[in-house]
Every structure is written in structure tokens, then in C-alpha cells.
Length: 413
Image (spheres, rainbow, N blue to C red):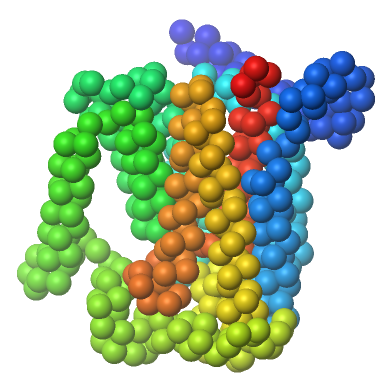
């Protein structure tokens, strides 16, 4: 039986790899050998979902410029490494565009098991790579490369939750089914917390919850769940600040929450980070200081300017105009994805788009919000902008997934 399971797993993985490789090959050849199919398709709509694609490409270019600027004064912001992530991400996005996303319904559970195994690897001595106290990165043997499994957990969780929730076709009537979906969602959330990476865990939790709600969960169930989460979070914080009780939250996590309420409490730590981010955003003025002229980041006053506080760096260099352009592009990206979700009739495709749009929305809100003091400080990156090859690859893969949903809408749609 074990041998048969291994064979099935290998066959399934081979099918996906072959499908994506075929997709890349077909995309590069521009389908020149299938003129009749191309003509029939173009008579109804473009092969690309242009609003979303143009917004994503513009954000990618914008992010590349920001990271190049950051690399002039911040050694940790490796521009070649970021460009490598962009190239790999674009290749995978191209393959996903041609690959029929509906085939991922049957692969979602296998991909989920694989990603869970990868998220356990950082806990294995010798394989983990520590970044600012988090051990969420895995060393690639024999080469000086690392990757972050929790980033890919985002897209895998979207696929799994959409696959499971699509069975209800918008009408979830059993509380048992709702609890089952919530239980599945807690698996990647808890694995990410072990790294520890609360920010990424929250992203997974929020986008999974959005999928469950859109799958037809009753409002009363959702409200009770929210109440339980608030109660649990309150107890968690209370035990962490009470002497003699077990402190579940780490001190730096607790400090971030305290600083959100009163930045003066930790003036040399998280409070300092928040104040410097606000100074950077405000000092950019209307048009900004120009590329490479961010004094807060360039002088070392703003920590993690290329990752967590990249919005503050962008605002300082490009000013109010630059931030409006950024928010406009994100608006185009997110709302075009939502518009496509409203058009798609297939439950799986609709829920995949809901998960992706929620992920982008939450990351945007959290990253921008923490830089201007309206959200607690977390390590959540700004999609397409923050430095990080794993994040960039994953973001571009989601773009390819959205394009695949568009590309495989029935011709009569």
C-alpha cells in the first residue's frame, strides 16, 4: 500500500511539473501552431486579463526601482538577488497562466502535505537559517541559497481551502463542515507560529477565513468564531503581562502591541522604529527626495527599510505622489481580481480569486498601516515591493494563477 501511495504521489507531482513545463514552452512559442484556437479565443477576449496583469507588472517594476535605490545604501538589499526572484517568478507565472488551474483541485492536498513538511524543516538543526530571531528560512544544501516555506504556504493554503470549500457551492449548512474547514486552516497557522512568524500566520488565517465566509458559512458561526478569537487573544495578552503566569507571547511580540498603544513605552526599540517610519513618511513631502536620497534609511535611522518598512522608504523618496501611484496600482490589482471573481462561475476559481485578493488587501493594509501608526508593527512585507526573493516568486505565481483562471473561462462565458 505504501508503495502504491508513493507511486501515486510521484505521478501527481510529475503531472503538475509536466503541465507547467508544457505551459512555459507553449507560451514562449506563442501558440503559433494552433492558429484556429487562437483566433477563436481572440474573437471573444484577450488571452491575458489585462487590468490585473498591467497593475502587477507595474508594481513589480516599481518595487525593483525601490530595491535598487535601497541597495545603494543598505548592503542587505541585494538587487541581483531580487532580480533573480523576479525572473524566476515571471517564468513560473507564465507556466501557471498556460496550465489549467482546475487541475490543481486534485493536487491541493498533496501540495499542502509537501508544504507542511517544508515548514517543519526550519525546526531541524542544521537546516534552518535565522533572520531577526525567526527561523522560517531553510538552507539549500551545497549552494548559498535560502528560501521561506511559509511564503509558499500562502498560495498552497489558498488552493487547499478553495478546493475544500468549493464542494459546498456557496451553501454550507452543516456546522461540522464549518468546524472541519477551520481546523484545516489552523494547521498551517500553527506551523508558521512555531517559526515564529505571527505576521505570515495572520495572513494565512485572514485569507482562509475569507474563503470560508464566501463558501457560504452562516453569519452566526462567523460571529461566534470572531468572539472566541478576541477572547483567546485577550487571555493570551493578559497571561503574558501578568507575573507568575506562563508568557506565551515573546517579549518582542508583546512590545509591538504595547508600542501600538503608546510609542513612548519602548523609545529605543519598537517605539523607535515606529517614530523613524513616521519621520520618513512625513519628510518625503509632495514629490519626495528622489531615488537614493532617503536620509532616514540611508543613514541607518530606519531599520529594515528594505523589508518591513519599505513603504516608509518609498514615501520618503517618491513623496505623496509616489504613494498615491502605489495605492492606485494596488487598487487596480485588487479590484480587477474581485471583478473577475464575480464573473467566474466555477466555485473553485471564484474562491481562489477571493483568497488572492484578500491576501493582497491584508498585506497592503498591514504594511502601510504600521508605517503610519494605525496598525501594530509586524513583519508582513509589502507585495511586489519589499525585498525578498521567496516573497517575490510567490506573488508573481499568484498573478499567474489569476491569469490562468481568466484564460480558462469557458469560451461562452
